[in-house]
Amino acid sequence: MRNTFKLFIVILFLLPLSSTMGLADTLDDSFETCRSSDSINCDGVCTRNNAGEILLTDNNAPTDATNNTSKRDSCNEKPDKYKIRFYKVGLCTSSPLATSGTTNPTGAGQGCYNFFDKSDETSDTGGTAIILSTNSDGTVTADASLLAGVTDLTNGSYGYGYAILSNMLEVQHTESFSANVIGNADTSGKVCWTINKTTSFSGKTSNIRGNATVVSTDENIANRTMKCGSAVDSDLAFVKEIIDDMAEDPDNDPFSSGNTSYESFSDNNNTDLGGTVAAKLLQSDNLTIATSANNAYRIFYGINFSSPVIIDDDTTKFEMSFNVSGAVSVDFASDGSNNLTVQKVGADPFQIKVTAE
Image (cartoon, rainbow, N blue to C red; front, side, top):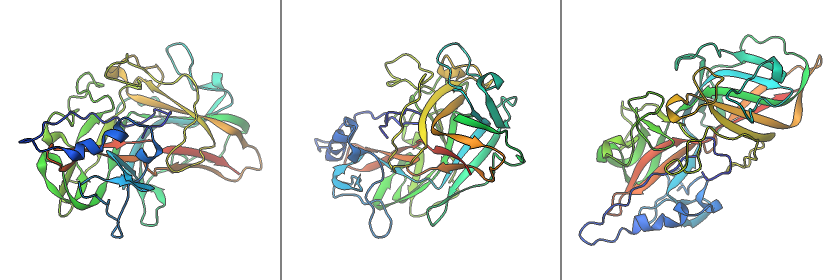
């Protein structure tokens, strides 16, 4: 995705591959337009055939679903499962987004009503993990609710909402193609599935929140995050992506903890989020703004509602809904001999919407 909102944008870290025995790598060349363009034809879903497989062209490239002349280096699809670990969620009467200082408070001083609060649990296994699953009819269901046990809502007119969640996002996904694709350790087939690997948004592998298992998909074919074959095997697992930096160009720009203002987020599916959004990286105390990739453990996700959420004595319904359309990015490269490889699966933006009636 190439949206203004940089919450979970996936950046491709692709090394140029040498051609073999003078054979032109036309597959790699076909990706160049989308690598250097913000065209709408380089975002969103890819073309599929009648069998539901991602359709590959004669030179093994996927194409944009609305313009099959645009060769795509990634496809933004709906994941089978998306796991998010929440630590704190609430509504606020004034903005909880810190524009200065070293903390991002969400307490009474910001007029916040926190209907879910496990912010005192600061480990990676703290909070509550919710798995969002895509059903066959395209709907999404959650295996747990952040509203469990909430019986009374504090009356008020709330112009803002927020969530504090782990910056380690997890996706489980299976994808099918019209021709063979190469995956982890050069496995090959028309079906590819995620395996237990951890990557980072920056592409770096060291000084990432103390995690020693982060891999770069450029360095070794064994680090690719999907395995391919004729059918899914027992290695199917959640793949993890750590959002360790929010700089525009993590390779060359200084570390950035994120936005200090709310911005429009136009996703690929024209979802009405009901407002503008912002994101910042926090430390593991769920409060202090991160200063480096090594102490970035949480994401603050803020919403400035277009119209306030009103809670009063007549309110009978309060919902938090999630949209994961396009929330998995399947990222491609060439092996240097015109064979399509699945390099990485990235966790792209999910969307939160709050409604009250």
